[in-house]
Image (cartoon, rainbow, N blue to C red):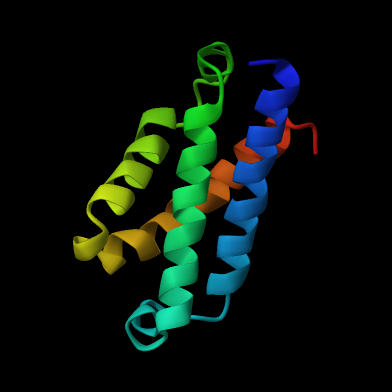
Length: 112
């Protein structure tokens, strides 16, 4: 995989993390139970972030060790393979607590 491909994947991660934060803005955890479209959209965005992370080359993952690659990819795997038992408390915590620092890290990597 070329550096260009890695940059595209990092950009996908950043764009989808920003979108998840924006979608969750002004919402609360209970909205995930009441709003099925919000629930599905946020789950999908987290899946995409994890899939993009899994496509970043090992070389780049080693270079940017401050990003919790294994946890991001593992979350994607848990969502995909455990689609019927998604813990919405964890999903909400990921969006509220884990995505903001990830966005900061990706912006630094991408020079934004």
